[in-house]
Length: 153
Image (cartoon, rainbow, N blue to C red; front, side):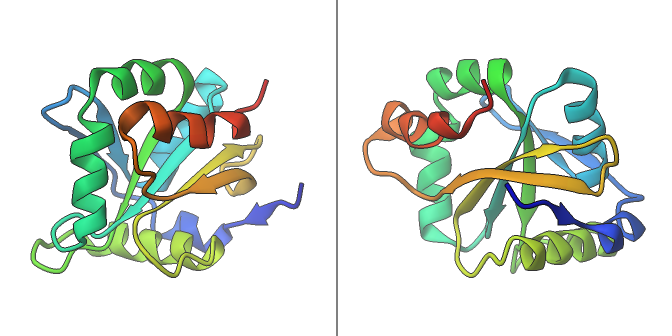
């Protein structure tokens, strides 16, 4: 599979945040922090490209999938969660916003929600795409079925 190199991303990765939602999951904001966890755990990253405060389908995905215990159990076992947010009403730090734009361009994301599953190599800028999905009707079970085939064995 082709690899994506994100050197510019590292310039903007100095600030990172982790947000725990009401669902108990930790969504990391900041690629470099997520990449380091992925390298340490051997898990791929699930990047959620979202407009968290304005995108109706993103909000629906959060309510129907990400807030469910089934997703929480699956995510904790299989992936590192990265939130790549493009909000309209809330402010995020410039370094995070710039890093999010770099990821958006690297993965050629044109709409929201888009979720990419990818692995990180020895260098945090060495990314191998594994698969992508978006909103999938049917709740957590159907959504998990849509992305699970892309998980590394």
